[in-house]
Each structure stands twice: as structure tokens, then as C-alpha cells.
Length: 148
Image (cartoon, rainbow, N blue to C red; front, side, top):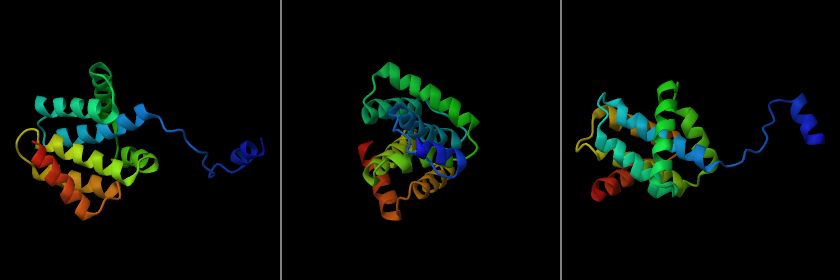
């Protein structure tokens, strides 16, 4: 009760936030959607990779993954920055989990058979916001490329 009253008097004190797997999946998927859309050509192969990543990484079935992609598409359209997605991931994911997200983002970029300069720039920015170093950025790229 005292902590609750303190939080009312001092709004700067943040209460612990429960980890919601669906919201984390939507945040990671929204980053993938941003990469798929940055070159101005949203390819069906890219969307399929996004769905596949949601199924594999988050253990959702195909229907749940499609719902998450739809939510991510809506959130990506109204997003003002990448920070709103990366903040949640940074707060709740380990370094290895964030690396896995980056690798999946690279898979989306490679889905259409080429890496656009805008895709590469955006992925570099995402890696920085996820606090991943250059070595992790390059390793994720190579692993995603080899997985194609």
C-alpha cells in the first residue's frame, strides 16, 4: 500500500511491468514489418518469412502468427519511431534473444533476394537500439544469409 501511495505522489517511479509474450512478439514483428516496408515494396515472400518467424520464435500457431502480423502491421503504420518497439524488447529480452530478433529481421530483408540500402540502414539502426554491437550485427546478417 505504501508503494502504491509513493507511486501516486511520484509518477517518475516506474512499477515493474509483467512480460506479455504476445506484446513482445508484436514488437519484434513490427520491426520486421518496418524492414519489409522500408524499400517501398512489400513482398509476399517477406510477409511469409515474418509469419514463419512468429511461429518459430514465439511458438504460435499459423493463425495466431497471422493475427500478430496484422497487429504489427497496424502498429507499424502508426508508429512514430522504432524506439517504441525496441524499448519493450530491451526491457524484457536477453542479449541472445535480441540477437535472434535481429537475425530474423535479416531473414526478412533477404526474402526478396536482395538487400536494399534503406533496409541495411534501418537494420543497423535497429541493432543499435537493441544494444547489439557491430560483430553481432554482422554475424546475424551472415547467419540469415546462409539460412536462405
